[in-house]
Length: 573
Image (cartoon, rainbow, N blue to C red; front, side, top):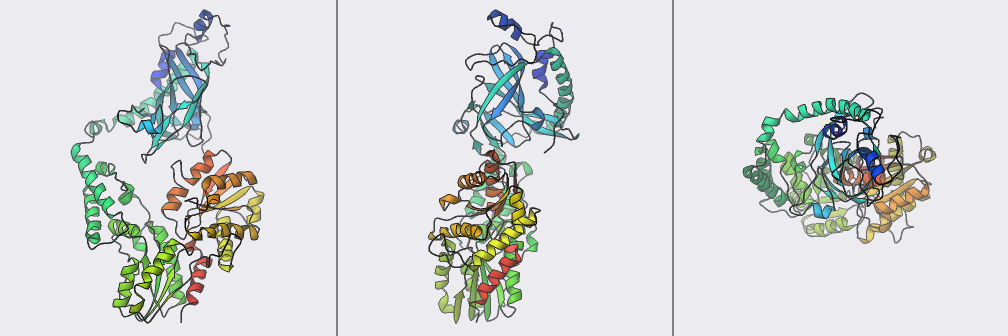
C-alpha cells in the first residue's frame, strides 16, 4: 500500500465551477453557501473548514464542496490519495459527487440495486480515466465516476460491476460537506489540469482506432460462436465427438482478434478459458503411454486445469509413487471430464478419464492393478470411483483400491487418526514457514491465525473437516481454523470462520487451501478479486489488520506424498 501525501488529479470540469469566472476574493467561499445561509436565517460564518451538517431532506446551495464518501465495505472505497473524500458539486439543487477509484477494476456504477442495474434500459454510470500521483512519486491511471447524490448524511444504494461482469450491491453515504474557496479550487485545478492532460493524452492516443472499435454484429457473432463451442465441451460426459469438439473450440478461439476474444461470454465460457496463463503445460507429464507391463499403479485425481499445480501437486504425488515402486508403471486418470476437456482444448494435453485409463490398462495386458486416489476422503468422488472400477474388475487378475489421503472417516467430529495428524502437522509447518514464522506459537503471539480452506461436501464424509479441526486443537494449534468453500459442514462456512477468528482475537490472517491442488478454488474462491472470495470477505469484515493468502496445494508437500506412498504400500502385493 502506497502512503499518501499528495491529493491530485481532481476532475477539472468540476473544479472550474469554483475557480473560474468568480468575482469573489480568494478568502471568500467559491460558492453561494454563505448567501444561502443568510437567506435562510442561519448563522453566517467565515470559517472555511466549517462542516455543513445538513439534514437528509435538505440540499446545499449551488457550489463545490469537499465531502466524505463512505461505503459499507473496505473492498469498495475511493483511491487512497483521496483520504476517503470526493468533490461534491451542487448545481440547480442537484448534487453529484466525483469519486476516484483505486484502479480500473470497477467498470460501471449504478444508482440503485445490482438487480435493477442488469435490467434493460438501466442507465449505468460510465467511468472517466484519471491520473493519480502517490507519495512515492509513482503515477497510475484509474477510473473515476460522477455519482448522483439523492441526499446527504444517509445511506443510499450504489451497485458496482467489476471486470468479470458480476454486479454487487453496496450502501454508501455522502456527509461532512465543506465548501471549497477559490484559492483551494484554483490550486487543485492546476494539479488536476496536469493530471487530466496526461490521462486525456493516453485516452486520445488510440482514439482513431477507438472510433471504429465499436462492437460490430460480425465481431459479436464470432465471439458468440466460440462461446457456444466452449460451453459444448464444458460438460462431464465424454463422447466420440469430444476430441474434435475440443480441437474446433481452440481453432475458433485462435481465429478471433484480440478484441473479439474479450467479447466471449457464455454460460460457462469467458476469455479466461483459453486466455488465462496458468503455467507451462509442457512441464506436466500426462502419464498416458502404452507399454505398461503387467503391474500398473493408477493414480486417480479430480484434476485441475492450472498447469503449474497439476505438475507440482498431482505430478509430485505421481513421481513419489513411481520412485517408491519402480516395478510398477504409474499412470494417471482424472475424474473431472470438464477439466480434461479444458486442458486438451487449451494445451493439447490429453489426460485419460477413469474409463479410458482402465480400458488402456486392459488393452495393455495389465494383470495386477492398484488404484491410488488422491482424494482427501471417502466422499462422493471416492464412491463414484469404486463404482466405475467395479465394472472393470473382471478384466484383471487383481484390483486393489488404496485409502484416500485422510484415511477412514470415523463416526463423529471427535474421531481422528494418524493420517489426519500427519497432514495437520505438515500443512501447518509449511504454512508457518511460508509466513516467515519459526513456529505456530510464534505466529499466535504475533496475533496471526491460519485458515485452511477445503472444498466441503454434502456427503456424510463432511465430518472429516470437523475432525481436522479437532485434530488441530488436539495438537495445540489453537490459532488454526478449518473452513470449506461449500460451507459443508455449516460451521466451516466463510462467515462462521470469520466469526471464530474474530472472537479468538487474532488480528492477522493467512488463508491457504486444504486441497491436493491449488486450482480454481484456491486462485478464485479463496484468493480472487471478486467480493465473494474468502480474502475479500475477510478484508471486508473490517476485523483484521492484515489478510494474506498462500496459493499452494497439499500435493507438493513431501510428508503428504509419503502418506500416499504408505497407503499404496498397504495394498501392493
